[in-house]
Length: 438
Image (cartoon, rainbow, N blue to C red; front, side, top):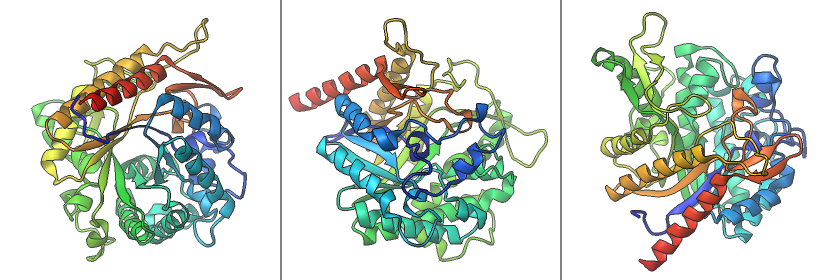
């Protein structure tokens, strides 16, 4: 089976995508509240105001996780619940929710894995400049301290940032995600300030005795369309894969950062604070061509020779394995956790009341096999979190894509475990049995 002892099987969600209760118990607005309520930003005007109503239905969702037999649940703590204005005093009612959730998980033997920033920046911080401003990094460290002060006695695993490259690129460069700014290459300060926030948060978490601390990055293998497009692929690789990993693990930025005036000499030591693990989110590879025009050093082109998910993303498990090998060869890695991996398909409840999502089973099976191959080759992978437990708010696509192991009827909030839920449950159980017998 090739998995280390104590390997963690899990599922993952994010606060804005599942919680709802947008205006309850003192929660302030986030950039995603503002963005999704702005006409034309999210498909069909969907918002996360209600989402999966996890804020109220969490006991049912914890019961679904217990039914799966997962070892761990990765969730995110909504910064606007804890500090509605992004700074200042803590909103205790906001932290009370995570208190209840954590205790509920522990009662079922499920280890909580808390992500501190999964894209829901308090709107007042964005109004002050957001991640373009260095001050936001210090505010993030303060929030991290407050969350750990309350929860670190029971939450062992902490993830500072989720996919900072997506915040930089989609949020600030291209404007397709909140906060919707179109700064193109002028968005680079958001990379540095997020990483600085990460380093400062590591320090804050350690000061509250948080035990296992890491960072989750989004990785996509860069494929050159032709040999002549290799420089474009290398440039994409630097932006997507190296920009948020080199400073943390090598103590330096790739050349694309240039001689950036916003990087102070002492910052890299803060960013390079030792971490206990690296979180890897993988969905698909990317094919690159040399740009004909525009400010970017690459153009993205379609990968057409593989089957695709419901969102048109190519399904390439071998690229997942090659990514893990690349990370292993490039860095002196801490242990890895696969913190997200999954797929969307247009899952509907059939006449028999069941959701047959065989395509998802095939996807997960192939990617888990690729991960097992990596562990057999000696790459230290400690856990796998399927994205996602529930169908949920898929950012700019609203409620159209379905990534869950559990189907959600958004009208009634009825949860229906899909065929993949049963498959994942059985996989976890059989892996455990196998581990016991060896």
